[in-house]
Image 1 (cartoon, rainbow, N blue to C red):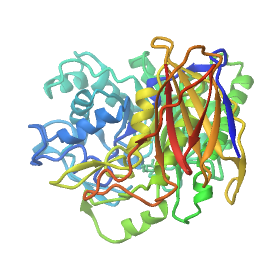
Image 2 (image 1 turned 135 degrees about the vertical axis):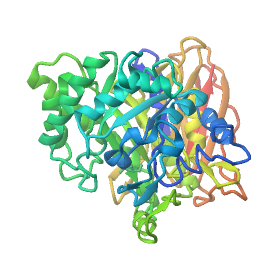
Image 3 (image 1 turned 180 degrees about the vertical axis):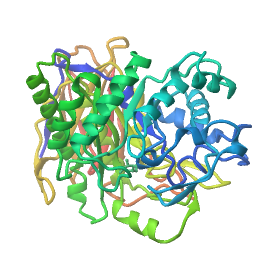
Length: 499
Ligand code: AHR
């Protein structure tokens, strides 16, 4: 059982867009309150922003952050979250059965985003609201001044417009759980009208129409086709969301989750291209994969059942395992492999809620296992993504049938001359991998880091033991005549660098 991989810079997929390394801050659980924002915390600045979380966000290498939801946005009135904090109303958040204090809102988020060095991606409410409120929000955020809403922003302390470029037209409108859920025709019409009018205010913005909440939705593909019939000419992206649930303990299947994501992307692209062909559209639409992760989703109901209306409860604070880190690394490989058609991606969510960063109220912040593959991919996936065709042994899974043991992608940085190979070994035994780098002559090994879950698959990082799951250095590969063999540990995600 060996695998082979040949790398050649002639086979390029496209640039590794920085926007693929996005994350998501929703008003949900303790993502905002107790996550990125906690006035009075010893590490908080004068505005209540947690400096320790800001530092970890920068270390994670996040490029773009979607805000404020998620299901939350479908009942949200953005005006509640601006102006003097003492005047802001307390509201019921129906999505998460929570009291929203509105102490944190748009202006606080923009301040946080600037501190974190991330690009904001805003979502408008197309659940309980419509075109007018989307226009109002855009005017407040992006119009320079001299109108009621742009001057209101200036009065609130933001003299310059925020210039938000990325806007989501609602969230998961195909889901029956969504407040203001719609049929594809209802949503498609509304999204097209909102998009047309928003671009009248600011033609420079890019818009994301809601695709399916996951590939298992009964309306999947038909939803995308209908929504795009209405919106294709007005939008720049169609969204995709997916979460993989390891709760049933079927490790072989969860390790193959990226096979499903890969098929999902291919099918959304095919559907978008079908609509483009019908409408004689020349422009190819991209996907905004703006929610993805591992999520022990079966635990959500218990979280929601156990209480009444409270402020910022702990919701879906999953402790991620070493195996989950391997899966997350593999999902990033998949997104990179589709860099020609996936233009934006956001891991959900950033802090506490199924998140790479965990905190305790009043206490420390730490890195979950899934933090590491994200941070290393964001750091090293620079340049051009190269097509790889690995030759791999295969194994059988209950959920996805027969799948390859090995998954890979390579990125070549023409500026530095460096080559990075990301590789996942889904198998329960070490996998020898023969690498052929003759297409890039003169390469030496720089490093080989790996997160190996084989010996302790359920290991997690906790407040008491925050560094139990971290990448380990393995012997640097030494190519000879452009060839070398490396040993990928059992159940592992690895990053191999050459230069
Ligand atoms: O990220 C958690 C939730 O998952 C989001 O609010 C929603 O869009 C999705 O169903």
